[in-house]
Amino acid sequence: MAQPVRINLALQGGGAHGAYTWGVLDRLLEEEDLEIAAICGTSAGALNGAALKAGWHEDGRAGARARLSWLWGQVTRLNDQALPAWMMPWLPHPGMVSRAIETSPGYLWADTVTRMLSPYGLGPFYRNPLEPIVAELDFDHVCSDVGPELHLCATNVRTGKVRTFTGDRISGQAVMASACLPTLFQAVEMEDPDTGVTEAFWDGGFSGNPALFPLYAMHLPDDIVIVNINPIYRETLPVTPPEIQNRINEISFNASLLRDLRAINFVQRLIAEGSVVEGAMKNVLVHMIADDGLMNALSVATKMVAVPTVIAQLKEAGRRAAGEFLRQHRRDLGKRQTVDLREMFD
Image (tube, rainbow, N blue to C red; front, side):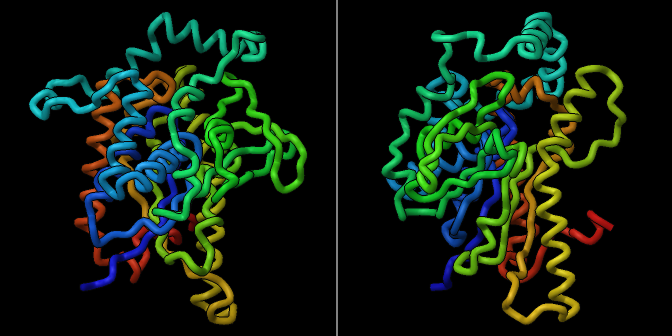
């Protein structure tokens, strides 16, 4: 029997748009001859990674898929995210829903309030809304050696540097830190087990969305499949206040990923030119699963507001994109890169 093809996954953050990543993972987990060796995730990507890892410990691939479904059911406060297939074509396009939300009085009021008031103003009434969800995950399972190696990214508030958590360093606090948007949540403070110093953390997207360097380890496969949910390119110039704020959000949360991809491109050129000793640097093979057409139609509004129908549509879009990626590039895995980094940066 042929050995499974091993890949690493890099999961971006993007609030409720992380349901797209749920769909990608759900489809990839159906492939018995595809092994997920390691995952590095930020924010929603960290939540997806932790849920997958916990479920894998419980019941392998089936357990991972079930735990991901449970997670997004909790996010939308629904017990079942499955919508009848016949209903999908009749649902409004997610872009229409996004525009309706971002122009609604309630959303505009909430957006204004979060720009004027601090989450610390709630005092003793504050509670991180992710806490009850994260508390349901068994971190003995999340931190175990069973299933993919897991890395989560957060941003150290004081230094501005990325902090990765892996193995027994992963906790509920680390997951909440990775998804801590500072205008909505109080910084997650925890003791750094390496230094004993209490540090404060914000969303990992500011410094690593996600960081790719944990996936460069020599014991891991060369292939890194990035699940991208923040469009890198937008054709239209943003002119309205919501459009401008949305594009600022996308550029900010893609900056660290583009920096890492540029570094990979530089190393690949050095290797190709023979400027480094063979084996001194890892020749990473980059792939990407994305749906820029769909994500360009959405905005930060549907990242912040988890609409059940949009969540279901995003999941199905992720499944379709993963299926199309496998159809086109399944044979490339382990052999060649499918993202043209030279074209991206030249």
